[in-house]
Image (cartoon, rainbow, N blue to C red; front, side, top):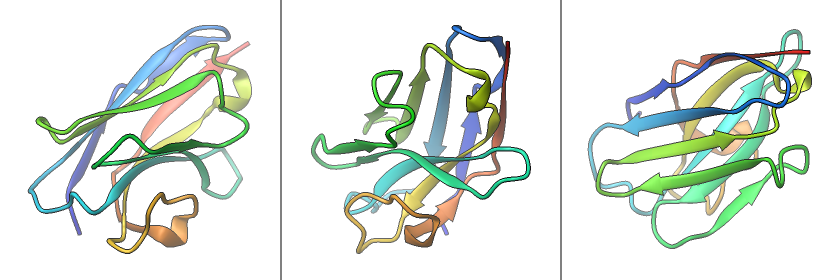
Length: 125
């Protein structure tokens, strides 16, 4: 387990923007990938976006393509999720995640080895 600490959640009106950040403690995870998942009220946790620590490979859920951007700062061990054009259906608890070492890009909760504590994002119409 790698400690992951998220920040940046909050409340915003539809069409607004928020930026989430996640800091990973420690080192030695260059072969891992980082991801963001979310859990809407009453629903299961779902994939949002992922990025490799090494290289520039990224992947996004279809529902957020063109609106969300995942990025990283390898020096600061930090991953960001820039969320633009937010919609009420984006309301959820957002979780930072680090993949298990064998996973290229985690698109399923079963591919995750470490989770952050979660941060609430609320989008009002």
